[in-house]
Length: 113
Image 1 (tube, rainbow, N blue to C red):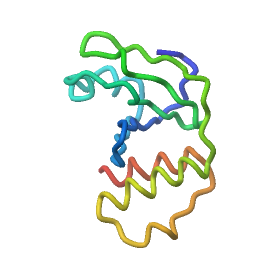
Image 2 (cartoon, helix red, strand yellow):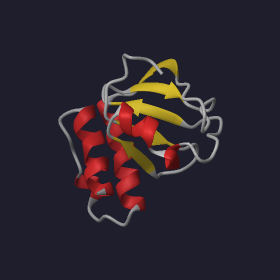
Image 3 (tube, helix red, strand yellow):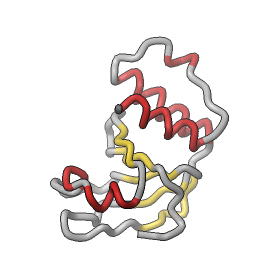
């Protein structure tokens, strides 16, 4: 895992609208639920700057994130969060807006509490 990851992050599962919020590296390393199942190709972590990391090589015993070189824009992350909120049953998500990528990711954390 890179020390350049800007926490918090969200996990985006390939082909799904659900996002998983991870507050910090210590939560990532300590939460066995995050490592119980193997990640699949296309599963990624998006950090609070929009940097994308491939996590398909991570398992319950290894925490390998590979920077893809991709960076999502605020608009792209906002769309992901809108889909996540809609999937979770929230209404009026088309009106959802944020000032930054970090703020969008924080909303996922608030929603998951």
